[in-house]
Structure formats: structure tokens, C-alpha cells
Image (cartoon, rainbow over all chains, first blue to last red):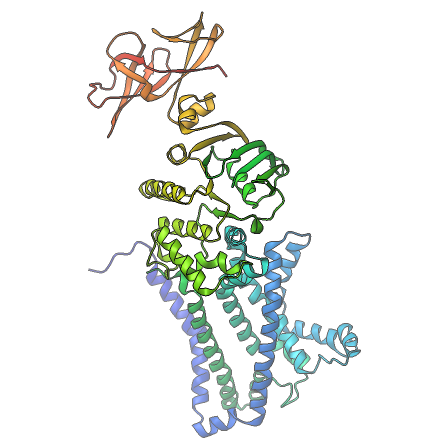
Length: 274
Length: 340
């Protein structure tokens, strides 16, 4: 006898889900890996460890780290302000947070380039201090931060909203200062959401393409990101090399998501019942 | 530490939650703030704690004016209705929190020893390394109390402390809280909407309605001499019947009740179900039984009087009575209030 279920629809729902995950996610990734694997190991290694590729990893990963760190601080502050205070324009700012998701990334890239070019509004101001943004790794960071900030805000915001005010009141009645309450009570409770936001933001930074190529300058060894390098190989009809380089991005993203999941499970261990 | 409230006022937007409440709680006393929801009892407690600031009036702790002292410096222990334990900290860490963030520095050994003492006091030895999600509701409430006591508060404030618990757990915790209070002698103020809890636990009960105190006194005083129809109704099941007073005697059906000092005319008679009895005939209010409900301690009769008023009475378990039976409700005790 088959076990009877109360909730209907499992076979259909699971079937649809599996088919779509296979077609949309697993199949392209499988093709990528398959293509890369058609190279021998020596050839594969030669491509992914070439100086130009390694330089692109460094630029991509360091910029992504910088952008994510910026998003962590600024996104947390933004979520905090949106949840905790009521002020005119709050709903407008709340809506603006999603703009980077809605805007075509190429448009964002062109807009940022215009602003940060040496004759743009921000660029001409910053050049007074000798700071160059457009066509430097700093520009890559700006583009990455712009396109990925919603991830942090939108993951932290609901958790912050659901935080029981009585927890803070309890901490206050026990004599905690604002700083110690934030550090000992609020921040630990936000940590799982922050980790989720940070990992999504970082993954998006690693893969961002459209917004970056306009502002980066794309100098090989200096401001060339990995996804652009893969794209260049593709343009040269060198599909195997493109797949090899892309596979490095893929592996990095997987490892990073696995690590954040582990960290998240650790941060949430207090919710586990006996 | 003695607590004194003087004409305390509090409004939220246009709603006047607390309207000129004056109250004294003697040092070491255990006092209940009792009232229906919206009566302002929790707001009063939160103002005493410093979680809300009073709009008017003053709050003194001993001789110190505490009205404007922020909660973190007020030295109160506050126990929240839903515990408000820090979910990411173990029981030990929860209890130690106040000592860790205190300006008064303590060594780790001192803190550990104090935590162990408190765990013993609240009978939770051995559960120190659990997280709040891993213990029962009653245990959580005890952790919350231990955490509040850890910083040696001058007064202990509890907001509906047992509201979220099962009846049995609630009764045990009540008795246990009473013992702890006896042991520590800390001035304690707690809020409840449950009259049984207030009468069971408190030295003195303060009954609130619409942001004002309507009566305060020992459980005996408020039970035996309710000052108003509201208190009478709020403290327990009550029948309200209409009666006519003529020359100091109230009449309902064939029953007569002494009504000294009441002018001639309509009056409301309040009767607890236990103040009434059932007879097949005699002096009383003629009525027809609508339903009989059996309880462990006796039988409750739901009856309808001749004049169509519903009345409930508790009778001895041996009483023989069935639905549709006609008979007489006799009155042993009654309390009269002028008709509203």
C-alpha cells in the first residue's frame, strides 16, 4: 500500500520542478563542464592558469570582495534605516533599492561610466584628489556594488522587521548599552540573513558582466574580469577555452555557496530542537 | 524598595491609556495589577520599568524620583509575557547577559557562580547549556525570571508572566513564584487579566478599568466588599437581576433582600452562582431549568426566571434536578448596586 498524503500535488509539482531545474540549470552547466572536459587535463590547466586568466581572477575576486564588503556595511545601514525609522521619502528609497535589479545592467554601466569618467560629475570631483574610478579596478567595484546591493538589503530587511522589540527592551532593562545590545543581541540574530545576502551579493559580483565592461576599461592583466575573458574566447570561436575559464567561475561560485551554507547552519544551530 | 506613582498619565495618539493613577507599593510587597485588556495595566507596568515615559505625574523608587531615569539605569527586573529570551544564547548565557553588559565589572568565575546559584533557585540545574528553543514554556519563563534577578533589581516587574502557559503549569509556577518572593523579599508588581491568578498570588490587588484604579485592597477585601458592579462582575461569574426597592427592602419575585440606604425604585442585584440554591418550592424566584451542567465540584443549573432573566446557580452534587423542571431559586447572599 502506498502511503497516503494529506497535501495534494506532490508528484506533479515535483515533476515540473525537476524538469525545469534540469532544462534551465543543470543542462547548460552540464554542457559547460562537458565542453571543458573535452580538453585534456594539460590543455585545461594551461588555459586556466595562463597569466592573463590568473590576472583576471585576481581582479574579479578582489573587486567582488571589495564591493561585497561595501554592500555589507552600506546595505545593512540601508535596511536598518528603512525598517527602524519613519521619515518622509522612506517608501521611495525602499522602491529605489530594487532599481539595480530592474535596470538593464548595460544601462547601469553606461550611467556609471558617464558619472565617473574624468569629465563626469563624480569623476571630475574625485580627480581633484587624484582618485580615478573609471577604467580602474575601483570602477569595477563601483559597478559590482551597484548591481548587487539589493541582495543584502532584501535579505536583512525582513529579518530585522520580524525582530521582537521585547528582545531589545529586555536587553535594555538588564542594563545593556545601545552598542552592546547591537553587538550581542541584534547582530548575532541578523548573521544568518547577512551571510545569505553576502553570498548572493558576492556570487552576483563574480558573474556581473554588462555593467562592468563599460566602466572597467578592459585592459588585459589589469582591468579585465574573468567573464569578459570567457566572452572574448567565445568571440574567437575558442569554445573549449571559454568553457574552461567559465568552469573556474562555476567552481568558485559552488565552493563559496557551500561554505556560506555551512556557516549559516552554524549560525542557526540555536534553532535546532532536541 | 518602595514604589510610589503620583497622578501618572499616558496617552497613545488620542487614546488615554492611563488617566491619573496614584499607587503605592510597599517595600517587599507582592502586588497584582488586574484589569481587562485595554485597562492600562501593562502601560502602568512599562512606565514603572521605564520602557515608556509618563506624559504626566511622577514615579518614585524610595525617595528617588525615577520618572525620567532610562530603563537601563532604573535597576528593575522585567519579565516579559513571551519571555523575550535571547534565542541565540544558551540558558547560562541568557542569565549571565545582565552581568556581562553591566558597568560593574565581574570576573568570569563570579558570573559563573551567580548563574549556577540562580539556576538552582529556579530549579533548572543541568539545563544551562540548552538553547531556549530546546526547553518548555514553563522552563523558559523561569529562565526569564532568573535573568531578571541576576542583576539584583530593586523591584521585579512581571507582564502577564503566566499568560502563555497551560493551566496546570500556570498553577505550579504561581505557587513557586510566591515561594521565591517569600525567599527574596523583593518588591514585586505583576500584571494579569486573570482574577484567579491575582487573588492566588498577590498580597494586594489593584483593579483597573479604562486607565483608572477602580478598587485596591487585599484579595479578601476586593472579594468580600467589591466597590462597584464592575469589580463584582470582573472578579467572577455573576448574575445580574433587576429588583424594586420599597422602604429599604428589595424584591425579586417572592424573594426579599435587605437594602438599607437605597432609595425606592429600581436597583441591580448581583449574585454569585454559589450564593444561590435550588428548591422545589419556598421563598424565592420562580424559575424553569433550561440546562444542567455537571462539574467535578457540583452541578450548575442554567435557569430562566418568570420575568425572562437568565440565571446560573451552583448546587450540591446530590441535587436532583433535570431540564424543564420548574422550581424556586433561593438567595443566600446578594450585593446591591444602584441601577446603571
